Image (cartoon, rainbow, N blue to C red; front, side, top):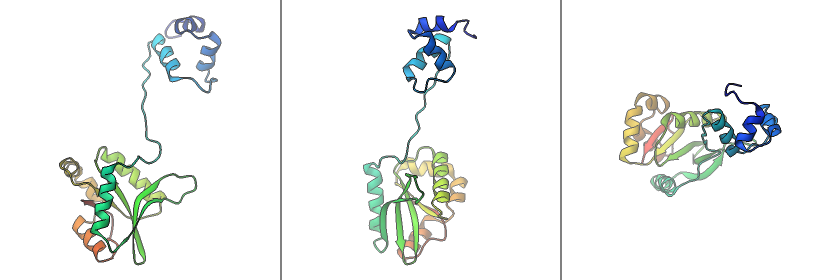
Length: 186
């Protein structure tokens, strides 16, 4: 109506039947191709944005695997288990690694390149909640970019990861669980 077209006129412009245009408008067409929606939007003078969101865990890259390997080599006295599921039925999320000591364990998430730190913090907070854990190690690859991002984050990172890296590494080296979450740059 806003574009001043009838369904029949719109259908003619985009090369569809008027009944299909009607079903789409009423939300009764369960599988509409994005290209069809784009044609309809263009004919109506509408913008049809498209955004993609990750589904499940990201595929590990060589840098992330190398980072986890450096962590394991640094702490040979601990048991390291990769890809540990959160344990919720139907939930495909997993910790990148869980490090085990005598009577304790701590989740480890490895990031080779920090991008959206707020999104990362939200994702990890949800994993902590859903995985019923109270602390984790955020393992970050040592690069100029990552150090810069962590400096910019400042207080928000310090609040979420209050244990200094040196203190966390020392505890882990002595076979103890750190007193809280920590960011370790390796």
